Amino acid sequence: MNFLELVAARQSDRAYDNSRPVEPEKLERILEAARLAPSACNAQPWRFVVVTDAGLAARVGKATASLGMNKFARQAPVHILVVEESANITSMLGAKIKQKYFPLMDIGIVAAHIALAAQSEGLGSCILGWFDEKTIKELTGIPAGKRLLLDITIGYSTKEKRPKARKAMEKVVSYNRY
Image 1 (cartoon, rainbow, N blue to C red):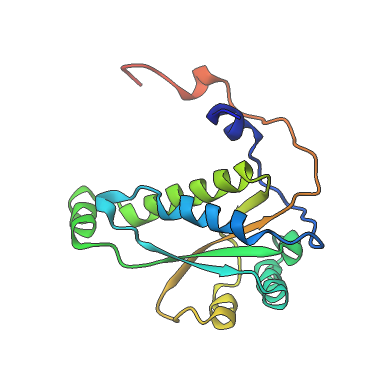
Image 2 (cartoon, rainbow, N blue to C red):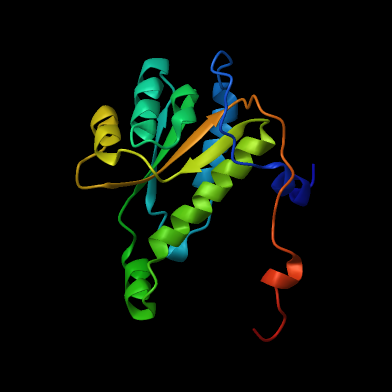
């Protein structure tokens, strides 16, 4: 599968076969893709808490669904929790000067790497930002002073691929001028 085929195949999967565990070697390759993701000034402002224990995954899924959203997260066999870590001084200085918070951009990039790597392994994923942060931090030992930014669910999807609904190229791309 070439890269455009991989991108076209990736979707936000919201139904998982929780009787089918994610193989550790597939998870390791996904995490290696995340580790290799680029970041501003090579700051790598992230840490991944990988939840694979079935009981804990169910409790994290419940906390992700507890605010009325993401009910499917209860069935996800794996949760990759993305925690924001301190950026290096160069990245922070650049962020201050340019008034752009690079760590959030970096975490967006790493999330895309995780989702695409999951797809390349034949797994589904969904990047979630709506969850009970306090409860998940308590369940997983993430320090109270850290920000838990994303819960990326991973598992074998039980749904068929959907056609992508995207804006036409001319609506999102221009050359040389806005």
